[in-house]
Amino acid sequence: MLIDIHQDNPDYRKIKTVVECLKNGGVIIYPTDTVYAFGCDIYNKKAMERLCRIKGLNIKKHNLSFVCYDLRHISNFTKQLENSTYKLMKKALPGPYTFILNANSSIPKLFKNKKREVGIRIPDNNIPREIVKELGNPIVTTSVKDNDMIIEYSTDPELIHEYYEKQVDMVISGGYGESTASTIIRCTDGFTKVLRKGKGDTSLFDQ
Image (cartoon, rainbow, N blue to C red; front, side):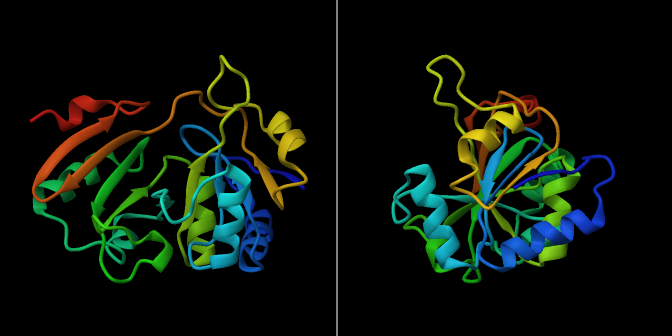
């Protein structure tokens, strides 16, 4: 199924349709403020396993990230943020960043790793944030890559739907996606380090 949702003013009925799909164990593809992403409810183990099969990931070895609605929502899944980290995140989010933070015991088992860290996004796109808000749980975010040797990420939602319509339950079209992934920043143990330069401006994190 291909469903059109406008980023600036998402149709609540369509958001509810997406949420019902997720509650029933669905796997979706949705727009962010960077590239299109695969998603599912982080608390649905079968959906998580299916998503990883679609993308060819080893669920036990690959560290997945997820989308939260706002900073208060993030605090449900991380240890208490240092004041400097909170200020940075407040300045950068919503935005094209993935923050690697110290996880607390509330995160699902499939997200737990030896470093006890978790990647979290609050994209500057109303579609995924409204989905998360209505669902009440975060959703996984992992990029939709293109099979083209030159183009790394798929940007056209209609072409994405053509390729994945038999593998996922729903593709949300929110217009053309970006071709650059998020900037990844680790904020653990009092240190801030840019791990990957992406769409987001890294000058915010110069120390």
